[in-house]
Image (tube, rainbow, N blue to C red; front, side):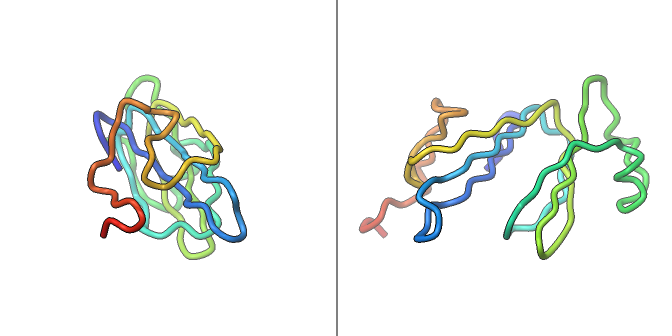
Length: 114
């Protein structure tokens, strides 16, 4: 979900994991990512490190921008943003994030309502 330069990744609880994890990128300038994130790892890197794989990224150069490499077992991508934050909790998938509690997600159906 993106809103006002924010990008929220969320892992759902499962039989293996009794918590959800929210990862929030703020002041997002650019994104290259897939739609499925098996075993996501995030690393802060330099623009030059990313350029070796993704080419010239100078168009996204802004003061204060940080570069984050996204790696999964299926693909590699990146986020160019002002910062990244995370929170692990026992909330449900459809409940607001503790990182941005003012953001409601009306499009997400609660179990038994869809």
